[in-house]
Image (cartoon, rainbow, N blue to C red; front, top):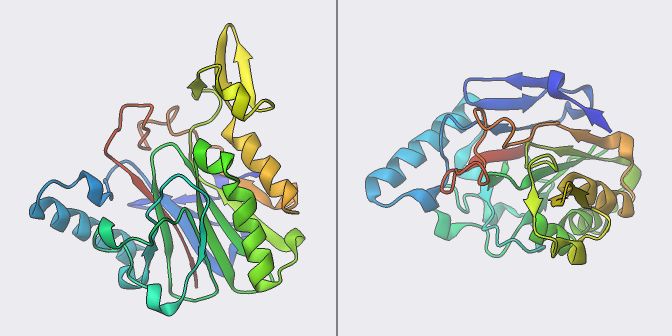
Length: 255
């Protein structure tokens, strides 16, 4: 596993991954400076403001918001392939988001795949040998349904990839240091629910590694941002940090 805080370039709007293995893609995530979630909007003016912020965010990265695809994110494990006809889904309103999708994959250039988060892990996939990318929204429900494994599996099945050549970038999310849960979680994740001084903590990171490994992805090709959203609540939105209605964007696009 490669930890890459030093390879994250800070911009005016967030972070972009700068790593030698990511030359054919641009990927990264925003910070808590702006909320990008239409579900928090309560009037036309709010929607216009969020749309403007999204446009500024994408323009700062030389990306096309009109071609982007946002996922509905229902905390399940549906992985959908993106075609040209899907471009623009969810870009300017939540209702048009890619329905019932928590992950998406594509080989299209100039088609940013996007999700919103405030504790769940954004997982970004790319196949180094070909122009293939993916993104997945990995919270405990999605991981319980196998979202990380199923995303890698679908990339392998559709694009005939070598699993050992797929790379994965793990963005900021709630780490085990801050993810306190009830003892019931031991039923769901017996090997990844930690006990400390009578309290229980869930390790989403290890669950993610386990599923990626099961799909044939090599540990050396998993790149971890090493950022906890709650520990770094001054920089990132965190649902556990009482940011109930604010969300950050994570994105990946082929150059």
